[in-house]
Image (cartoon, rainbow, N blue to C red):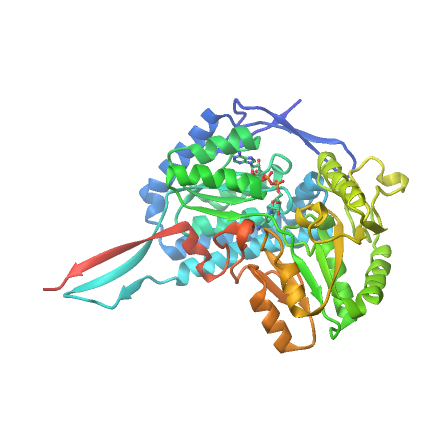
Length: 480
Ligand code: NAD
């Protein structure tokens, strides 16, 4: 059987690490076998990146020339949008329509950072003596980018676009569940005319390929998106090596509905906030807090709306809930629902695999709503990363803020109320990197994104998102 190679220094190589299977979670069929990068292959990738980054051809590329290359990548992503969407859909089971939207967003990320690299300025600081003080921004050199399986198209684009716009070379290590989009991006970089070695893609297992990458002495910055436990382990290595890290980690986001909200809009926001991407989103609104006076009625409406969601194959028009990304992940989600039952929770809807015959071969799970738990239950504490919503009542703002902040995470939060004063007060009180008011899961490459507490360290995206991948250098010119 052919093995999918990976990309080092512009060459497609088979590597010497542990090869692995990519499986389609919608039908359990093998997509392909993929080569794994060993520590020696990672070493080659980092050396190539290092060489390419130091090469004057790249170092002296003027900002508008770098921007032109980034725009060319965006053009090719648009041209190959359906192909990219298909590759992602076959690997993580996401709806084809959503994959297409994500391909478009990936192109948008390259255009955004192309715009920034062309317009970004350095600074002249106020002089405190007979000198002129310049602050300029240098790339780190080689950046390691490590990504999860849930939205590789967008997550990889936003890391790679910013890091390369900033002047670095990148070694990208995608999740072993979704190697395809990163490999396609590597191909696009070559076709766009980037020098070989500026983007390298090493596929493989986290404990083998990923670990070798973060430990490599020539990796000067680590940008990681994934689970909190992995992020913490990588953070420890980075601390020991004294290299900066950006960690985008998990969430358990509170979604809050006050009695005075536009309840029609809130029902839509709550249902799509948890169930899009089958709940496999770091910002899924997975804990729903409803003001007690409307609790029963509102919950009945959320359940009714959830009942209308169509669980179906990801490439069939009309499907709204696609499979989970893997069979092993479905088992994990099921174990959380079991724990919720044991903790006294009531399953209001879902809580099982769907019965439809055409879905039996895939990793499908019904959208599930659980009431009757306290905020301390395991299902309310841990990130389930599946289509499971836990619902809790609250009495007044103080009780709400205490419960909503009663989590180790701090990534997202939604607030539904018609009172702008209340929205402001609560938004300020919640410990969260992003707060949505009367909307949910709106995303923009133009604003910083990241988490408080165990949801991460640092921010990606936004105007200063490029600075994450640079370090300031001060140059003082004597004027005596
Ligand atoms: P994961 O932590 O298991 O894996 C993420 C990546 O790290 C993979 O590429 C994996 O191979 C690699 N990895 C694993 N162990 C490693 C090690 N010891 N050293 C180096 N690399 C290693 O996460 P996942 O299951 O792929 O993704 C789901 C998680 O990602 C969820 O917790 C979700 O909330 C989080 N996530 C966060 C954001 C965000 O922006 N905050 C976005 C998407 C997903």
